[in-house]
Structures are given as C-alpha cells and as structure tokens.
Length: 444
Ligand code: CA
Image (spheres, rainbow, N blue to C red):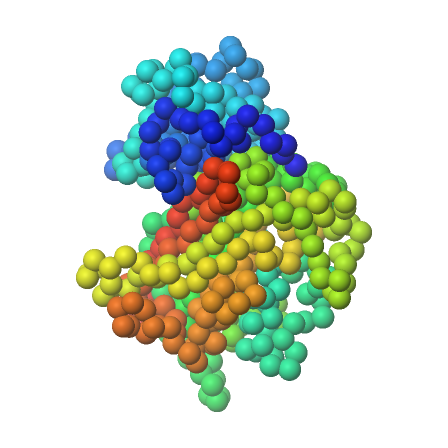
C-alpha cells in the first residue's frame, strides 16, 4: 500500500490555475490517467493526465523528452503511458507508476522550469477532448460487494430470506462482458429481450420496461499473475492500477426471468459505462480506512484477512447519482441528485476481490476490469439502483420537474460521480460517468 509523500502535500499548487478552483476534481495531488485526442480531429489516441480543466498530453511530453534523463523509471513509464491504450503502462507496476507520478507532479507544480514549454504545446483543454475506454479490457468481472444492495435486492425476490448464506463468506461475482464496455458520453439503445409478465404462461419478446443503472466503481488490474499462481492479500493492491466510476446498466425484467440458475446474462451485457479517468491508488492513499467487520458476522477466512488489510483495506470515496429527463434537458434544468453513497460501506474490499478472484489459479491480466457491484449504503436514500430506490418499482421517485420515475425512460441521462474529500486534504475527484438511453431498435 502506498505511503504518503510530497505528491500528496495539499499546500503545493500547480501553475495551471484551474487546478486550484474550488471543487475541482483534478488538482495537482490527483493526476489521473485517460486515453484521449482532440474531439473530432481524427488524431491518434494517446495517454493524457488531468490537471485542472486541462489534459496534459503524454505523447507530446514523451516527444519533448523532458523527463528522460532525470529518471529512467519515469521515462519508461511515460513511453508506455503515451500509447493509444494504457495496458503496457498498467503492466509495469507500482514502482513505475509512482516514478511517473512524481515526475509529472514536479513538471506541473508552481515554479517548474518546464512551465513555458508545456504551456505552449503540452496542454489540451478538457472541453476540446474526447476519450475512449483507456485499456483493452480482456476480461470484465462484476462483484456484488455491498451487503446493503444484496439484502435490499434479495428482499424483493425472497422476503423471508433476503441474504443468501454464502454472502458473508464469499466475495460473490460473475464473469461479465468486455466487448460492450463504453466510455462515458456514449449513448446506448434500450435492450430487447425475453420478458416473462407476471402470471403469464410464456415469455414475450420486447424492449425492457424495467431499465436501471447500477452505481459502481471499476478497478483496473495492473501486473497480472501467472496461471495457477494465487495472489496473497497483502500483495493484492500491487496488482491494482487504479479506479474509475462504472455504471452497470441493468434490465431488471430480463434479469428476473433469466437469472436462475447461472446468474445475469443478457440483462447486463448490452452496455457498461466507465468514466474516462483512472485515479491511481497512490492518489487515493490519504483516504484509506480500516477494514472492519461487525463482531456478530463471520470474520473473513484467513486468505482474505491480514493485519495490514484490517488497518487500511477500505477507502472513503463519496458517490452520487444524478438523473436528467428529456423534459428537464429541454427546460435547461440540471441533472437532479437522486442518491448518495460511499464506498466505505462495501462488505468486501479491493484486495479481497483480487485475492478471491485469483485463489483458484485464475490469471488476471493488465487492463482487466473488476466492478465492485452496486455500492448501496445502509439508508434507503443511499441505494445505488432504481430497483432499490423505488422498492422494485412500487414507490416512484418525484423529480424537481414534477415528473415521476420508477425505471429509466427513453432520453433519460444518468450521471454518476465519485470524489474524496476530507478537511486538510486536496479533493480527489473521478470526473463523471454519463450515459443516455436511446429508444430500442424496432422489432424486425
Ligand atoms: Ca452490477
């Protein structure tokens, strides 16, 4: 786990003025990575780092050879991070990530001798940038780490027995679909599928009527493990590059019919959105929390437990869901907040997900993506999905426009946000993960 160092010092400012703006997601202490280009330019994709409202162009930086002689580790990391996908950079591991972070911090801090050169050809305004999924994701696995979400959903399906007995022992997950991962801002069609109306004798086929979002964080794997070699819990975070915001769009009616006995399939594989920016674990180091387990619950099995993990295994990341209907958009009304939560409520941590995933010998690879599962908190208004917020569609939400929603309608946009904030520390933001529902393809 990362120690605090000069790059976390909240008092150091950047020469990019917007990095100091109140509420800015991307101060000097963050330095998250993305893959970007100038919007509509057809330019080559390349790695970038967010600073204030700008993107530092890593390909331009690599060309300028500003950090080559100073630090060979940082120069090697820069060459990898400047590519059109971050897989090679993710594969390098914590020593390289840390060296590049420190080098970038020095270039971007106030008083840097490189300011004039970078100002001239190193920055692209975020308002003029477009992004893509920052890694070639070979495999995507979605977990189910919120006990509150699992209990609330379970209660809708099984009122007497909401939480299945394995939940408090096994970090539950399923192998998802990587091909339909899309970057924030990509709109997607409402899926069609098999639906089993209540009381009907046979299913119908049509557009989902119970389309939902899921508020999650995504976890990009760094260096992988060899096939057959598990990952010990105290090594797990050395295999984690960083985190993004993730929306696991879900069709609840398709899910309800198809999920037994092998779990979600078409209800989840039509689109999963990720934020463009990946926040490194090192940037999140000031926001570590102890991992705790209620005394009345089973304690984690030894392979999922350690003293170090108990000390700092969890993370304090605030989460928020906003919704904007077409009517609100036309009236110029901003998206309205419909839920707030925090990653601290998760029952299973990052390290536990990684260690459990690999325990049987499954090989994780650089650029693989893990979803945390819907990060609902204990209170009703902390639910990370409409199915929970509306009690299975029984209690509609009323929006500031006066409109009501149980599930998503065509044209609705969902915006997920995540950030870390604490007195005396720089705010570490993730940017947004946004997507809009388009009408389903008409029946053939
Ligand atoms: Ca999910």
